[in-house]
Length: 173
Image 1 (cartoon, rainbow, N blue to C red):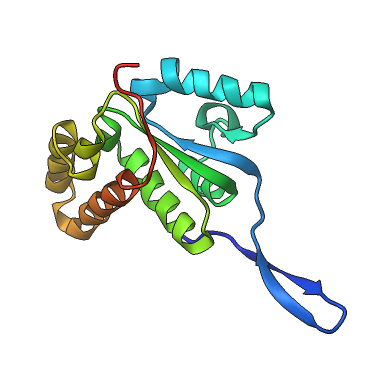
Image 2 (cartoon, rainbow, N blue to C red):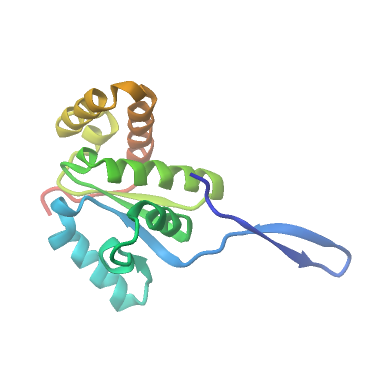
């Protein structure tokens, strides 16, 4: 889970120094659970991005058929300037979403890129404290991944951390 950073040389009049410059392919990466938001909120968000000329990674349009999904998703995360995480009622039921979230958080910490949460019909405190459907979904993951208890704990910590960021509460809107 490394965030790709490539080195380039920048020269000044007095000396040459190397600086870290990210190689970015997308303006934004949106993490969302398709069953909850793909045909409503996420579709509207992607349409707004297109109208504004914002290049956003979208898993159903950017991944080639037959290509392994995990490497392409990681490359898209590493190559994005900003991350938007749409927390919906069953976001935490998806191991893909939780793996994306963990990668997004890591990349953000390494590169300083911004993560912006959207709470779509879910209380931010349910995400932050893993209550309600988040508690139920994570309990199922703990049972499923009992051989790797660190995995679910990392997901819990990532959920808490990102839910503590300033974001948008889209309940009842």
